[in-house]
Length: 104
Image (cartoon, rainbow, N blue to C red; front, side, top):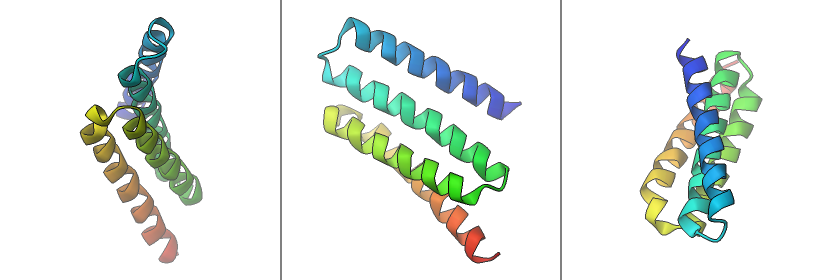
């Protein structure tokens, strides 16, 4: 149930951020917020894939989330702390998936 709630919250976040982007397409912080919200949605997907045993999918999704966080930092350094946290989560997920994969 918590994963479903996380998926719903992540989707709402993306919709809200994209709405803000439509209203303010030239604002760097808004562009960064879109990337952060997309990144968190991808992290939720990575978690789901990991729970389903799809380790390669988890690694790929974590890599995508990490890249989205990097884009967010490029748009607006003011979101660097949040983007860095997202990258730490993505790295931890990928590292754990690799560890489990190596043990199989």
